[in-house]
Length: 200
Image (cartoon, rainbow, N blue to C red; front, side, top):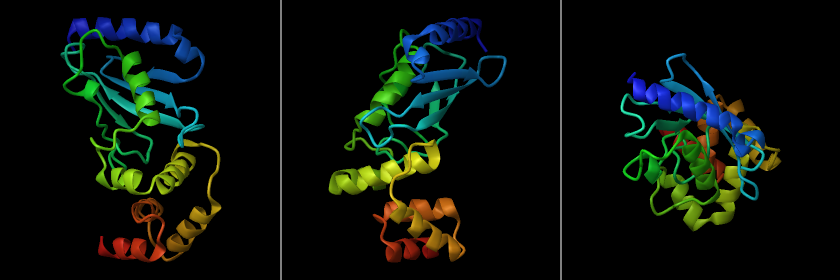
């Protein structure tokens, strides 16, 4: 890795450890390897959102050309959000693409992702199914996002009705994650979720 990138990451890493957000346990960053090319980020679900109480893990890969090119970031923790792929964790956020500036830092990225959780952009989606639910049925979206936050990010429990539907379909021999995705995609309608599961 280029020396400029390593020096910059080391400096940012030290700054992050001292930051107010880190002290409040809102954001966190750890090294995955000793050559500073891969980091693990973590953000807290923002208050007053369906993600509140959850902890979201992020994979951060630093390119050779950092800070002139943005880091490659994806959610490891599954999340139900219009701008984050429910399958791969890929993120649709302008500063991770064409709006990146060399003055931005990893702290900027983590805080921007936390802000994205609080303020979705459904007209520029990464996950069309989630964006459609967000626009067409906001209450269902909120309930589904809260349920995913509980199941995948450790947020407080939400709907036991959803848990029963999942257990019933798992008892039929379907994979748990596939069941959650199918039910979420089909607004928790068991019949259409089963059709989707059988078609895959």
